[in-house]
Image (tube, rainbow, N blue to C red; front, side):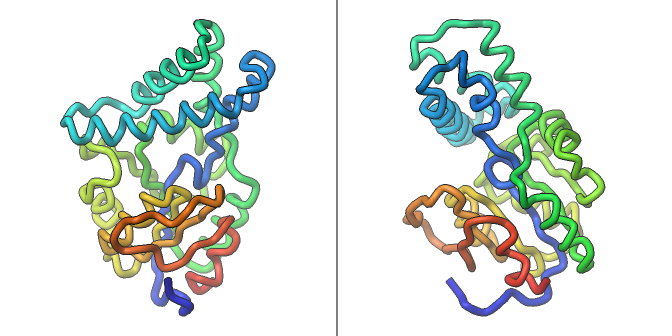
Length: 228
């Protein structure tokens, strides 16, 4: 990782889930129904959600992220010996209304004020992303919301990262990509982006090529790194 701030950044592209939006928010609101193991269930839900995207990409069996999210929740609830259709429906509905992390609105406002374009690049389906953005009240701070649905394969396939380059019409060298997922930040750097890993969860460094340029713990810390 470098100590030199990034130069000539014209756009900041963000992963959505875990980066802008709190993936534990749905389960947290159903703590009473899920019990003391709510966080474990939430963690399994998230892990299987990611695993299913990778496996389906390798298989060539793409389905929408909404369906992947439902399959992952089914697995998580079954692993906890819970069979509650009403609870499952509530959790899925809540996933459309995940709260944004506290620093997200002000970070986006600061970037926009500095003339830097802001966009989301996510595994999420367009409907899921639109719902989360509306719930967070950040639609007017974004120049684009880009979904893997356009290419029919999940991250970290290079065609996903290429979407941002094409949609923004800005070269990868002038884009800073932010993700809370280490594998995503590493892969984005390998693609050619400048990459900032927002390591909210204190994860160990990945054993992958092309490590990120910077590692931070919340998005506020990215501002001086991109020249704001």
